[in-house]
Image: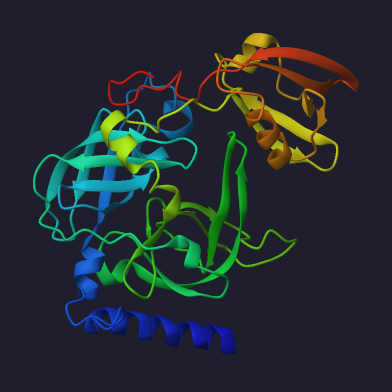
Length: 335
């Protein structure tokens, strides 16, 4: 009860500080309404023949955050990958078309750009490394103050997703924001420190805990931002990608729940239900171990020795790893 009361008071103080322009000690600071106006509604339409259409749908809605004066909008990538039509809606109700700019699978970030002036001040990028457990923050969806909640940082820890995805020091907050996709995680200075990715029933990583959200730290964007704008993706070699969906299987290994039918592992003969127990000579027992070991095998195109257990028997496969970008239609660009 005390914690809930403290969070409500802290939220009030955070919003009050933003409104008064005192959060960062500057008399010229943006007001709360100006800061929150930078969070816009994003709608994306995806062709039915897109690789991600079956899993993510052909109509996707969430949030985006304006981060420069030229209409650049940051969002979580699953909202806009493979879209052929993107629309932004401002708090005023005005809608503006946007175009695809870039996508980064490693972080999960996506960028689009408005095709007409937004008339919105961009949100400043903060330092997500300064965000620690028990910090009070604001989580904002599009729609101004009515779409904001106060939250507390529950943990900073590694997040692994079954779609060959890992984020170090992801930010976990509670309570949960119901409109989390692409939502802005804002520090007391009115700066963007994370972008909403998921809602989780338990954000502690323990056997029990409160529901909440996972945010991708904004510092993961800074080294790749220029590349995403100029080339549509981060420079350098792609990580090896197997085309698997997995989940941890106790200490036995990682069970394959489903696969991309045209993915590298499927082409090599790997099947759903196989339990991954090793990559090369390395025994792996969790998604974290599997992904980190896989990514050490070399770039996309490398041949990976994948060891699985099928029907209780060990089976080895030589898989020529691909790139996650191979099957995606990304703004007319191919990589």
